Amino acid sequence: MNILITGATGLIGKELGKALAEKGHKIFAVTRDERKARSLLPFPCEIIPGDLMKGAFKDDRMQSIEAVINLMGEPVVGLRWSSDLKKKIYDSRVLGTKHLVESLPRTVKTFVAGSAIGIYGDCGDEICEEGRGSGKDFLAALTVDWEKEAAKAPGRITFIRTGVVLSSHGGAMEQMLFPFKAGVGGILGDGKQWMSWIHINDIVGLFLFALENSQVHGPINGVAPNPVTNKEFSKTLAESLGRPLGLPVPKVAIKAMYGEAADTIVCSIRGSAKKSESLGYQFQYKELKHALDEICAPFKAGEEIFYAEQFVSIPPEELFTFFREPQNLEQITPPSLKFEIQAVSTPQIQEGTLIDYNLKIHGVPAKWKTEINEWHPPYKFVDNQLKGPYSLWHHTHEFRPFCGGTLMVDRVRYRLPMGYLGWLVAGAFVKKDVTQIFKFRKEFIAKMNLHEKEIQS
Image 1 (cartoon, rainbow, N blue to C red):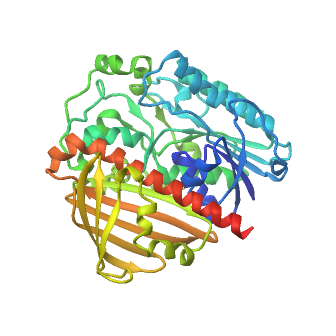
Image 2: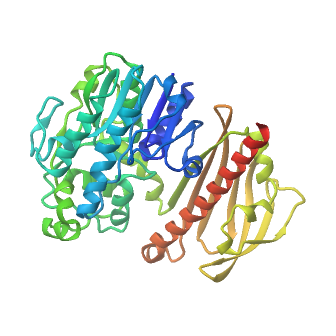
Image 3: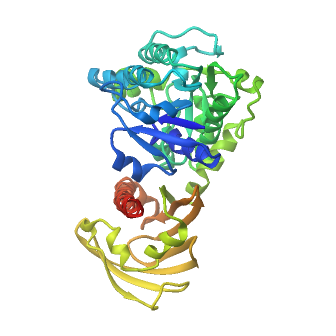
């Protein structure tokens, strides 16, 4: 099936795109920045240039589109809302969806629309099924308008009203983890407000289920079967991380920090999964503890985890040859680090190879010695820091055959010196640095991949 995705570079979009590609679907992604999309998307797709904030777009390839998954929208949580930001949040969903629908051929058979559980507003202890009326706050009103525009799309239409998505790779959990890992994360307000959560695997599963099953139409709550109060959520998260629960955060403090957006943070929505289960969807994660234990396991050992994926259209056998040359590491490292290899213990990289190099971290010189712990060409190798700025740096590189190319996966486990104190003082800065290093690397690989495709064509 030919499927068009908006918001493909987002948390749900990336995981959903991989799942669709594995099933053999042909994916088209609308984006304003093709180069950025190529560096971020972990699946093969055709890029259709378009800025849906400005208007509808035309492209001959649209005539072949059979299904659409609309995931576009600016982030809502964790920001203090100004009038300009509220307009941006509103337009990215409502106006963007309007322009998307105007761009579609009437031959589209299925339209799966992203939506939000926030449509119900603050409901106290009431269980919210899909037939419940909407709330009156900003997000509820926004979501009503969002769904109205999506309802104008051709074909069968389904709205996935997504709750709090739990994932170790971003989203709401990224903001929650720092205070709870620091041992100061606590209950918000009185903690009695309900939280409708869902594991990333299940929200992806629900989108697939809605896409593939013709009996699914109208609104579906994208939530797990067992919502919890904020008090229970906070206690379970602290337990899964092996950290103490901090003091409660008063509502007045939340209001002072987030302004109007504070109402969303302490909003009580007890979403029901009755409809999705009755239609036949089987959840992988029904209980919160199961979901949080899976997500938090690496952090419980006191380690930080960095995870990145990127699709490259060439097979592992060809891609791996680039990485087996130590000098190529200099090309994929930001110039600001002044990365220079000093010595390599073997003529070719193999298990046991030692690599010495110098670099500068924010201008401060540092020496690093790496050992290749595992070497399994063309699919995997592991390097481990023996001497350097970290207490632990263990980097697994994987090159997985995927849809005729390679899904390149980087998983870094690291720990800062001085234990908890070092993490508390420098953890956020180091995470930002590591993210920027891999951002540069992904952009370099994307350019290299594009160059290979141009040569082949």
